[in-house]
Image 1: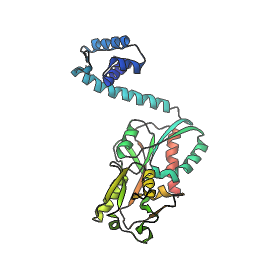
Image 2: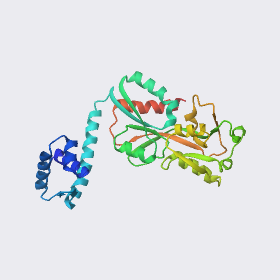
Image 3: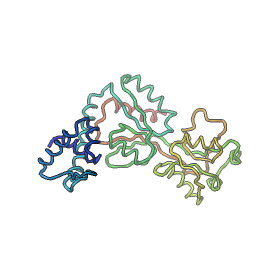
Length: 295
């Protein structure tokens, strides 16, 4: 039983079709069928039931599929780690991030690239708590900068800084001229909020709950950019991280702090505890942490 045979078997099981699996694997269908038959002989039991309409896993096939999928995943991880052992000053660094880091991340990257000019940086948005854990565990990201409270045995989380969540509303909105705005003042306003699974949503709802207020949830969004666009269109109000608003913002909107101690969040840098991180990657983590220690 070798890795190639298991890969063939898992691909057929995923596709439930020999023809589709053969196309993905770039081999002929007869060669694939022979490989599966040889694997079944080696295992001593049928793994796939074939009929004219579909392919199904047998009980033995279901057991082997589960074990083989885990083994192949570990092999892929091992391959990536062996490749990264060589990464001292070149290669690719995958960074997951939230939107509000845009005001400081370029400064850190600029200094980092002077030290490691041959490293290619790939930046991806990783927003929900589930996405953070999946991206790290699937080796899609080396590091993630997140506001999610991720405290898992296999994930390291270091707090970097705190940031306020502020109210954003149209410039001509009646509340825009008030010096002090309370959560209760927002109850009847059409509210734009992050979708479920986002920590910012939980923070906002907790702030309303503490003030015994109920938001009028009108729009659910993924990105703060969309929220700002809706506010500009006079479709509602929103609460987003203050750091996202650094730099020029559209003159048709304004932002205000709210009388709520709950509207503050912590931003973390996270990575897998037991994953091998090459010197160039470790250096980036140190650069980020040092940036905020010096501020």
